[in-house]
Length: 104
Picture 1 (cartoon, rainbow, N blue to C red):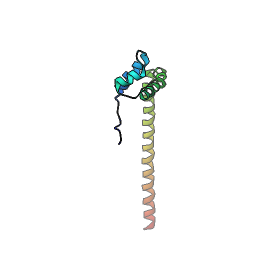
Picture 2 (picture 1 turned 30 degrees about the vertical axis):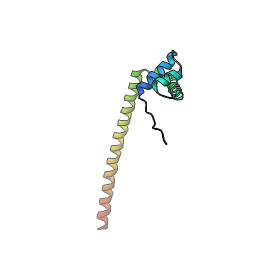
Picture 3 (picture 1 turned 120 degrees about the horizontal axis):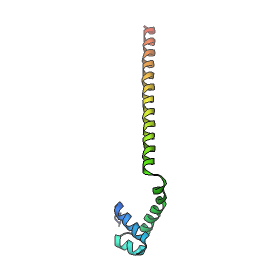
């Protein structure tokens, strides 16, 4: 007999972890309130605590600027590769025409 796997929303996970971090209730109380296993609550808490320093590491505008720079660089590379591909196609067609006329 297999048990159905529970899926918890992001909001529910966030509420549960915030309650654990507030320290007003125990993990067991919070787990019973949200119908989750206490180990699952502690895993969510560890995940949040591990990701928390990243929230303050980069400013949002800095991240947006880096994303824009990366996008511009990638578009430049795409343009360059398209130009090279077009040039190679022209050369290939030219060489095929020369070989074709030499054979006839």
